[in-house]
Image (cartoon, rainbow, N blue to C red):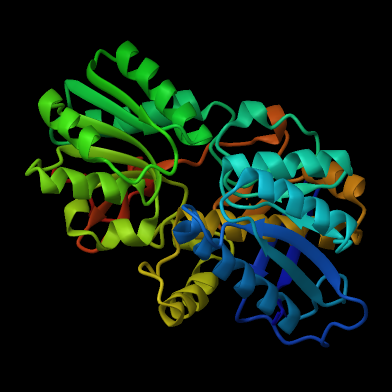
Length: 407
């Protein structure tokens, strides 16, 4: 596999309280090419199966990061080799493959797969072998009990409460706050977890629930769910969807002439959702979108230039850096920061450093000293507007001049 490199810029503040790592993808002067035995970073992604549309974004990000890394000085002056395997969107297979990565491939470092269920499987393997696991899309922080796992999907420690409240805050500040709500959700672990939380938060905030439905992850037939939604006539739909489920639901609604009211999609595949004419003004959760003020975060502007070009060449439906690409990129930033600062590949050494220090990432400063190694919640609400995803809430992170729109 073609491999590559980034040069970190470190700034030690005080004794060892915080090391803020910046990356310069394009402007850093060239260094001597890395040499010696490659440092192996192992992981899986859902390159096939129902999660593949989103996992392809993570694959491209990893390829870019490793290529750029090796163009400079690699890690510790050595080239980096990314050992990537296809877990087919299956947690059991992810577990088996991480076993292989540790015991057969002898990976020096681990990086997590895509999506909560697969990450949980990888986490079990990492714990068994006392390996650090840096991962990017884990949605149930209370399950992240392993002491040497580090999340870069910065949702905070209680996203089942803070996430729904963020959504309802955005709606309350919008042009027409809803009074009734339908909650329909996949049973995919993180999605279901957040949707159950949304149900409780909605009740506390005085919204009237007119429908609650669940489906098995992997479902492809949303006709009956669309019909129930049409009968319920909610002002607002909370869609506990992941990957292409939201698109399939919107398509089923269109077939029965039911135009979607204001609708939130928890974890949609960003490109397909963006391109669907039925998803106009759809809402979703995000941690980063490619516009001001977030493009001033560490590495963001430089990475965006490369990602936009590579995503277009790869034929991805959305070529902008979004929450998925940012979480993935941040995971690699955190991995590089820890190795560079400690000059070590020892897992315990890396874990100790990460708990004591802050890393500047594309998402902003990231720390790991909270419950289950979680830090600050950087969640935001975005909306499809004029052919792009734009942040609409909180106002401090909204794209300049943008406000929430109704369907």
